[in-house]
Image 1 (cartoon, rainbow over the protein chains, first blue to last red):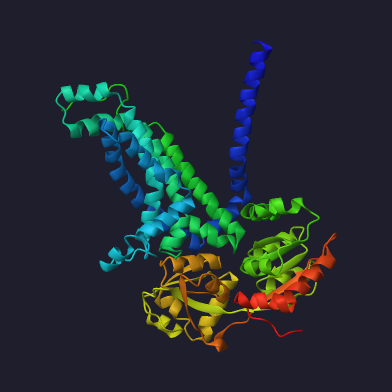
Image 2: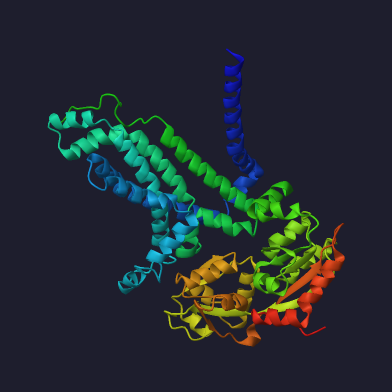
Length: 272
Length: 244
């Protein structure tokens, strides 16, 4: 190896180590800030339990909505080229680049009591502020663009030939989607879901101002961290650790090789 | 654990990382609610505005502050006990106000309307001064039950309470009169019986540390308590203690 190459490789290693230390040190600091026995004690408080339940429930519903609507929507966009397609994709990515605080204000200006749809909703007896529905809306709004973007990329990477082959064998469009495109895009979809989930479970700004911080109803884990910060920093750190563990577990699940989906290279064509 | 707390507080308020850089500058640590009034009285000090509890903690951790202006006497008293602060002087008072969005969708006319129930209320949390004062006020108005009969959302900052009500997420809430004054275009005020008001006092003290600018600190205190200082405080909605 020439000294030049060694120097270059050394530079690359240095960059990777620097990035790893910078990104992981704060997480290590957080995880070691509270002793494990204290952590257990802190997490047994009723505030944490109710916030955990609110967070899990609202994120579950929000993620179900996001997957149920986002997946077919992303598939349609990649199905064929049409005029304005690039514009449409850019529009979908727009909420993605909104700073979180701006997203929260935008959501309020839409669904809030004085927002675009507020009076209409109120006239039909729908009162969103301070309700769990508002939490679900906030999470879905901030998380969905992350999923859509990943889903579009995942479906776009599926080979046209394989979809056409399935059609040639007489598969209906629905079967092509469910049995060919979906399994082939599964890895990308799962990765997109993991990122969207992490963004959603950490949602803070819109939830605080739109859904409020009502104990047992809208107080999610991130809101509980904020509320506890002024009372008991150890308790706030403990909830923070809990959030990191949940997000870490989801990321891990998304990366694990799937046990349920068929082999990638030869999607099963039997049974049509 | 102490170090972790310090790191967290510093992270929560990145401004402190920059402020001590100019160590020689005369620095005033003041409660957020004083921002407008203090800057109108004198723009010359280097200000660090924040929650009184966080500011007190930063001073305990060795922040290079010369003056501490606290929204509640307890935080200054804590520093006095640790010999970190001179004798606190009361320089302003505040009151609580019941506020509603200007449209007042629930047609609230007085604090007793809160007893009807079915409202969405935004108030301070049980552990921050605003929330403690609010609970004390409701108790004196015999309206403590209002916190159970309505949907109550709690916040750690007065600005979050005002924003929530101004945006219409909440039907009503309690904020400092000074907050209402700063958001008059979006919030209407409903008078609360003066006799029920809890005492809300702002104090300032000179920080005790090596290198403190004592001359500048006492000159600053004189400016705040001067006739002009008192007028500006009053214009910003603060009450005033009797002249010494």
